[in-house]
Image 1 (cartoon, rainbow, N blue to C red):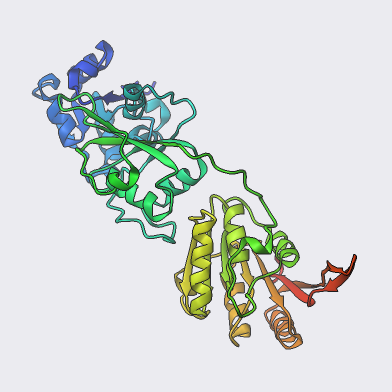
Image 2 (cartoon, rainbow, N blue to C red):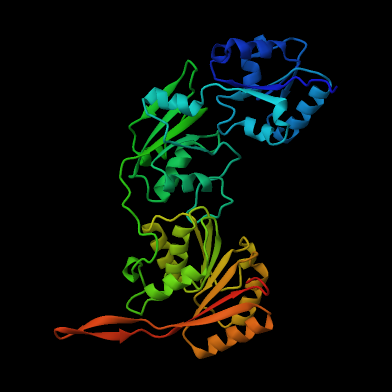
Length: 431
């Protein structure tokens, strides 16, 4: 028979130290031969760790922790990992469970610091979104930042939820979060509270301040942030926003993919909630911004060569409350190499590099991804079809011509819009 391995106990601890531990957790800690935890937590509980026990600081060494545990268990040692609050709430327990046999660990949870902060303010938390920026220094938020930014996921959560509890870090502080809300035009939509140094003698709850003021305030670490919406969100149309919803360039005729063509183009892009989308020749941004609304867990990368139009796209993005959208002022295909490979690409305009652009897109499209292009000239249509044939792509063309009713005296007539060709393609053999 194989020897029975003593489980590694993952113990949740609060900042009042041993007072936060139950009898069982304390017994495991005192009997442990290897204790792993952050330096501050190890120091907090030093008096209750056996003198002969090995202590290891997991700070900066998280990837080594599973191997430390395996090695100790192979030698029959008793192991305890000290974590903050509930180790299964944005904590180390999920990380270890995914890398060790589930039978090799046992979680002894404590109250989450997020739950504790809610208790201090009397806020019910069963419908709160728990988020975390407890990671490396993210830097201040810049509107339009791509998914790699450390605050990106938090802003997505803020856009999608009305009540949030947020684990911070010494770098990603409450004032940094407040500055992000100001930059995104959300400062007046939420109330904010900060719970500092919970379960310590210096514990303090700061609430009732304007978020614009919090953006310049220092807060004692460690802390957690609570946000709750004070201005209700208006119900949003999911698809097919009117052309008037978008600012366009005036007095020149605005560059916008018209309502009917936009709806069909978005449908042909076959978007999913997590799609990565490219919008090339963004114009007023209508297709890319609607795509960003539909792909709530995805991201849209847009490029526009005209400086005035690029500024309009940015204003439309802010007015529509969209964060998962990055705009580059430039001319495709320059800069596309830095973008994530797309699930869908929309081409609303090109600057004479159409053949090169189509070839590049077909190479970068993810499996089953779609390229959708709009053309109003026969020459560009011919160039696109010839290039798709040359590339061995699967393609089809739809001509769409809408007519809209217009008043004439006491009656109405139908006024035709210009015909548009919608060219849809996949890399060869994808259909």
